Length: 193
Image 1 (cartoon, rainbow, N blue to C red):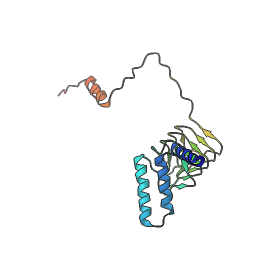
Image 2: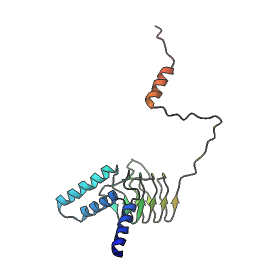
Image 3: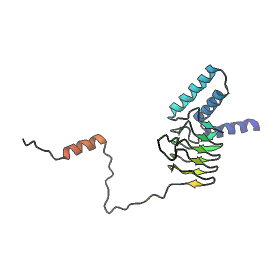
Image 4: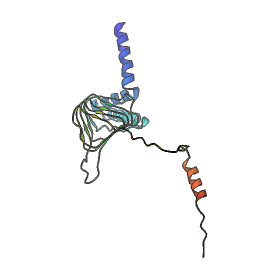
């Protein structure tokens, strides 16, 4: 009875911390690499592609991943370059980009190499041939384009507050209405000829 309950709790924890789509993706990815049969490999590749498409994510099978990655909020909007290397026990939140830089004459061309036990917050962007050390924390919405040594935390600067003397009108106007008002308020020119 206790073993059955422990198994159920373990399954619940897996669903909470990894999510069903992420779990299915990892299972198909693992089976893709373990299979020798071309038809079965193609099936698992197709399943991976379907899961990624459904979640608006891109994690190529060529990406070197040394161990499982935790996706607490699923695969939603995650992009990982095929040239990236990701260490063991990393946690990646939604809308993260781990992208390569292929611009000519760029100082940090290439794809990121991420160490073990790295935490990457929601919306973070890691771009180019940067090296992220072990046990690094990257805060939400940070843009990383330089190497980060081990055991560091990367955060954004504190937001700056601008005080206005008058009250601002923050009413939403659609672009079409904005353009119509702009055309209507613009001075009419007459042809003099």
